[in-house]
Image (cartoon, rainbow, N blue to C red; front, side, top):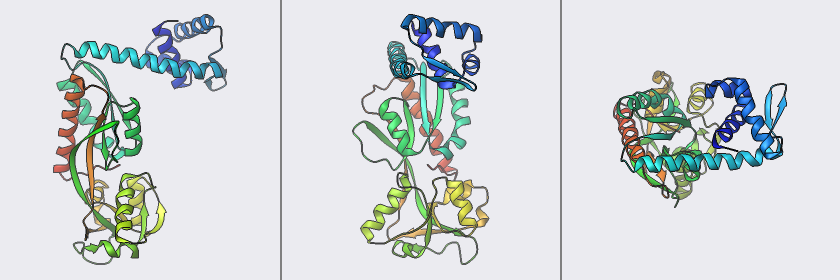
Length: 304
């Protein structure tokens, strides 16, 4: 058993087929199959069961997969640690972004890495803020942008920017500048994210403090899907004004400030509290904050 065989096995398991893994690894499929067979022969177990649609892990394969992922991560960390000793931004980094931020920042991030960090390798994953925090704590993600994170010992956060939350309604009916008291929010049927969503926690925490019972009409976590329901008259949403601008159809909505108190969607840069910051992480974090603040200053919306 060697590291190359473990890497090939993990890639086949993740891809679900030898042909897809061969393309990802840029090697011939027969060579890939041969290395996995050698690994199975060495361990005297069947790791992958062939099906009509590809391969699935056997019971033994599932156990080895967990070990192999951890081993490969430790090897990568050891290599990055040695490279970091030269104080050069090299190695591989995984950056986590909320979904709509991925649409805004993926291309600028790639371009920034090409210009500023040509020796680094970048991977970008998307997920809700709660999921990104779990992935950073577990080491799956190195650094990410998260909204309104709850305090955790395993995570360190730096503020990036904040945007006020507003009541978003269909365009018809009233002046867009009219504000809404938070105390009156219970009168509106809401299209609101599910309970693990950052904005949902902010709204419900303040509703509990204000002793307001919210009318939850629909639970939908996708920002664009929420706006589609609002536009169709199925309720109202609590989002930032930038979310409406980012939809590309701001004329379809009425956006009113929430006051008494004002609520904010706050964006943070999150990293592991236990993993030392390498030169690559420091450079990537600076680039990520610069790009995020640039979009916020331009009036673009970033949300989870």
